[in-house]
Image (cartoon, rainbow, N blue to C red; front, side, top):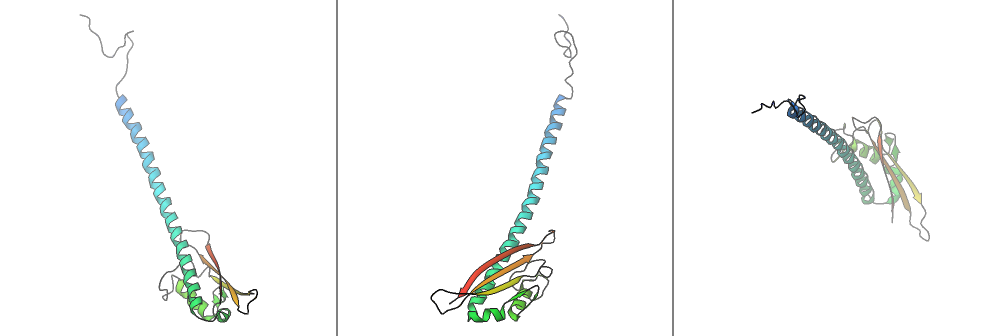
Length: 165
């Protein structure tokens, strides 16, 4: 009986199979690690997008609350004397609202946005003519600005509505 060396092929050349399974395992671990790193990066990006969406929702809610307060206050003709303001300066109800949306203020009650003192909101009110009517209508433009701690530029939300009877 002829002895056959398992490390030689039919032609008698040496075959090296040692470490092949180990190499396969290392390649699999590298591919798996790249996938995990990708998932972690995706999770971080998703968290940033969720935070940004939350700030936009808060800005919309704060603008809607102010519009509801304007409707509830009574005479639309008083809007121009009570609510107009920008740059952190304005009438009494503007200043009250401004302090309520500033996170650094102790008077915020419902919601607040970061970076409001550096980027104050503005409220513009202009009277609009209503055709064939003696009633007045006012166009209210509310611009809310905020800047999250990780953001390099401020963001804005603008709401335009008509108030009148």
